[in-house]
Structure formats: structure tokens, C-alpha cells
Amino acid sequence: MTLSDACIHPYPDGDSTLRRMALEAKELGFGSCVALTTQPIPVLPLKLIRGILIREETAKRVSTALRRVPAESGVVMVEAGESGFNRAVLSLRGIHVLKGIARTPQTSLDHVAARTAADHNIAVDIDLYPLVHERGMVRQKVLQRYEDLLVLHRRFRFPLTISSGARSILDQRSVRDMVLLCSLFRMSADEVRRALSSVEEITGRHGPVQVVR
Image (spheres, rainbow, N blue to C red):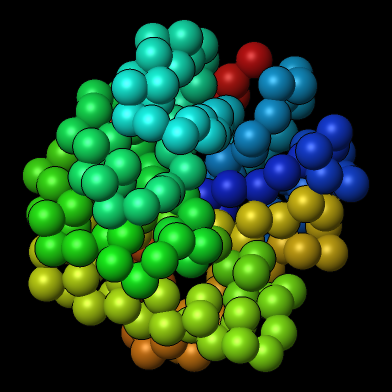
């Protein structure tokens, strides 16, 4: 079982190089990580998977963007929106992860969208970056959104991923840290570890270490 940080942002989007962040992920207990980058990926003793994040306002535009996704992109993510948008994009082929659910309204992921995600084996991401960096009522909203997400996950059994959303090595979190952070919204350690190992499940990436060039 390979544990994966499902989203990091290396330079130039972030402050640290991909090589430095990948080595840090290895030290923090991960066997792989998904990097949102177009930079060349170095050969390292860690499975590196190239990711792409689609941000569009309509499902039709998402569908168009999916047709332009490079073949070497291992994990395709779509930024979440309101409920109608989420229902529509979760029915599209070629999507692996719905991201940014903490920034959407409470009703954006309902039982219909949850069932669709389960049917299409599309994960919903738990991004720990806002949980760590936000304060006050904004942080409370993030906690509540993840509690609500967990209720739907336990009922409909769609996959979850967990990401640090790190933009530098200072943002990266260990497996133990992620377990503790997720306990704030009542996610068990076993549930965290299953979520951390779900990248292989949703992409079909099993077997030996692969390096994407």
C-alpha cells in the first residue's frame, strides 16, 4: 500500500523545487505524491505522478479541457463548484479527483453527486492547506465542510484523497500530522490511511515505481 500526498505545488507555482519537495515527502513517510507541474520530473526513489487541475465555470468547458489533457498527466483534477456543476462534471470520463470542496457552499455536494462519484470511482479531495492556514470562522467552515463530506463518504463509499496542498517544504505534512489534522473533523486513522492510499485505486497505478518525464 503506497501512501500518497495527493497534491503539491512545486516551483514556479510554489516556493520549493519539485526535487526538494519530493525528497521531503519521502522523509515524511510517503511513497508517492502528485505534483501540479509542467517541469521535468527528476529520477528519485519516490513515485512521482504528474497532475493537472482544470478550473472552468461550466461542465461543457471542463469537457472541452479534458480533450486537451496531455497523455502523461496521471491524475486529472477538477475544481469544485456549485451543486449542478459538480453533478455534471462527476459524470464525465477522464476525471480522477474533485478538488476544493471546502471553498464551496454546503449544498454543493449532495447525495446525488456523492452517488455519482461512487459510481464513477472519482475521489473527493481533502485539502489540508486551508485547515492549517485559515483562522476563525473560515477555519470552522472548513472543518464543517469536511465533517459533512465524511458523512457522505461513509454512506456512499466514494473514494477520498488527502493532500497537503503544499507550496513549499514548510507546508508539507507527515503521515502522522495528517492523521492528527483529520481527527479534528472525526476522521479515523484507518480512514486517513485508506484515503492516503487511494491514488493508485482511482488511477489504476499499481506495481513498481514509475517516473513521468
